[in-house]
Image (cartoon, rainbow, N blue to C red; front, side, top):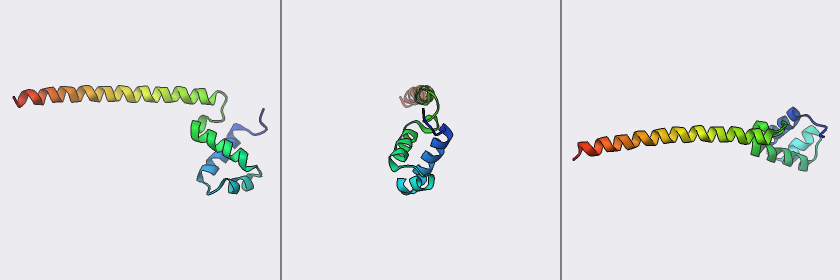
Length: 93
């Protein structure tokens, strides 16, 4: 079990993303650069879910929901375009 809270890890990871170097963040928090890089990588991959219990799984579930919503919207737009194409091709005959 980690001695650091998920909120602390998230704050450090967000700082690392904004900082010029990991060394800068490591010095600020008294941590080693390797730890900062690991947390930063996890944050880059999973966002705000990175350090929560079951966070990666929750991130994946959210990502699937977002992609399913986007797919439905694109399918709807595609149907509209098909209908418009059919309408205008009939008018030009």
